[in-house]
Length: 372
Ligand SMILES: *Cc1c(COP(=O)(O)O)cnc(C)c1O
Image 1 (tube, rainbow, N blue to C red):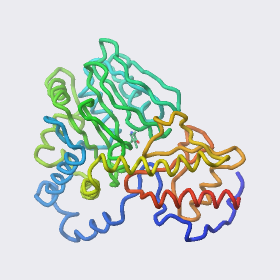
Image 2: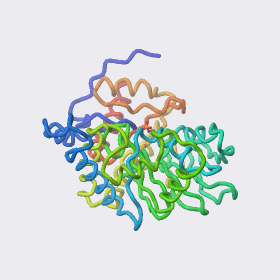
Image 3: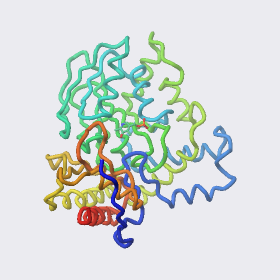
């Protein structure tokens, strides 16, 4: 690989904040300052007492407000992030067989988990070509869970979470939540980690649960299958209703996510935020469309993610080199997903990233390409 040229981007071109990663993603500095301002009052105090439980309550209330929960839906907190939730769901939500829509790295990972479970039938895997979104269709009769991914973070493709039959609909919304539109009446579990759109840190899962999901949790918790205690969703239900978690959570994650949730609600809730996301995404996709050396990777305009943009570069321009120069100038983490193996930029456009920084990002890339 060629050495990184020593290029200094003019300071007035650079984004105000250089964090454009797709996970962990930008945490608003205002939220970090609010966390620091809690001083001796929050971190380092008991998660079973009011100070911390008030933050858990604030987060659960905030999620309910941002998503305007349908009647009977509840906000659960489960430990371990989306990856742990796949294990919890395999034990505690899939009765006999799951269908998975696989269109990239993350959607494929959950499918691999249910495929290994000795107590489940082999999953029904519906694959879509990389860079395209699947369409949800009715599954075979023995399928009782349909597993969707709102935003495939590895490819920058978003899909519509819809119900096609009477199986439970589980949607991994780890990168989509808070930035993409969703009709929760179509979904039974809308679950996500908090280090992407919710601008906090990893390790905790929010699950927006429908009444049918809560019933399935009870059904399998009361059945014959052994479920490891840490992964019992029935325990997450009991604890969430008491504004606490099963074991010690990262209190800073809870606090930062609650700050972000209040901020999203203050901006007018999900619909208003999604409208902004459309404008922000247009900045990046239109820019790529206008350059003869760049193009959006996802060809179907309606499948282009509003939160993660993937931009292919012409072979004459080495994306690794562009990213090296960006990094040397403090603009971070826009590398393509390694396993995709494309000459690509992948840009996090999560709600915490303002339009002005995306404009500055594309102007910075223009400058670098001019000077390489
Ligand atoms: C980042 C990501 C995950 C993994 O989240 P963890 O918190 O690391 O478990 C899962 N699914 C999607 C869609 C993601 O973007």
